[in-house]
Length: 295
Image (cartoon, rainbow, N blue to C red; front, side, top):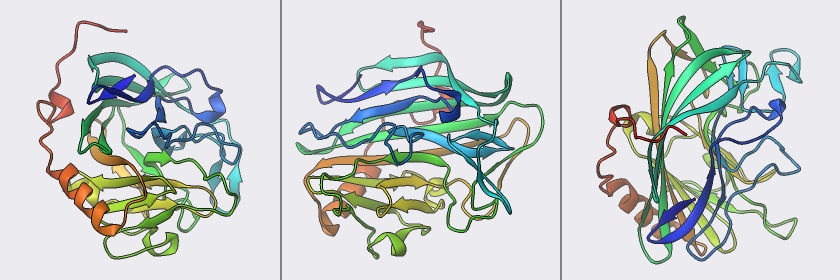
């Protein structure tokens, strides 16, 4: 359970029991606004491998850490026996509003990546708080790897893979959340673009996503509102991301979780405040020392 300003705001499932076809991985669900509105979806009927908020990558040198089918060039989506799993190794820190852990990304018993992940919370106002999600992936395989996506494998516009937030559908079948940045509105206009922040606004909730550093801000946003509501930050939008043996890649996403349907100026103001917030003693997750607990 993660807490913010004394209130329970999210459950973090660090050792999920899931079928291998879902690429088992830790996830956050439910995530709630201060007012109690749930703003994540777990294993929805349209995409059973969507797990609330998670770090999900569809192609790590052929290994599927996203779940579901794999997009194969000239064949399309194919059910393959290529799923990996993210396994919790140990906690480095556990506080009410902070979790820092180490994970092992394995496929068929072979470790491809290790990860240091920091998840923390802080309040912005009486109606809004921030989920701060940092991931540092290190190539532990002993050989060069690369991260890809359906787009890099031949499916245009499907550059998903990395931080991903599956939001809930509205009660009315024809009601969709609004998505916008500082300069554009609608799925077609913002999908695949880079922007300092991006907002997804439902009937009575708003999520404002922002990259916390220059490297993260260079990643395009993957956005869906028509088929389902979801937002991700893409590691491999148009070309594969090489990862040499021993090298690492770091990303940090801030998500403002707010009650109410925010307009553009309000979303921009919250994004600015979130980015400017002093993150305290976790400035580089690589430097966090191990805690006493190993569970």
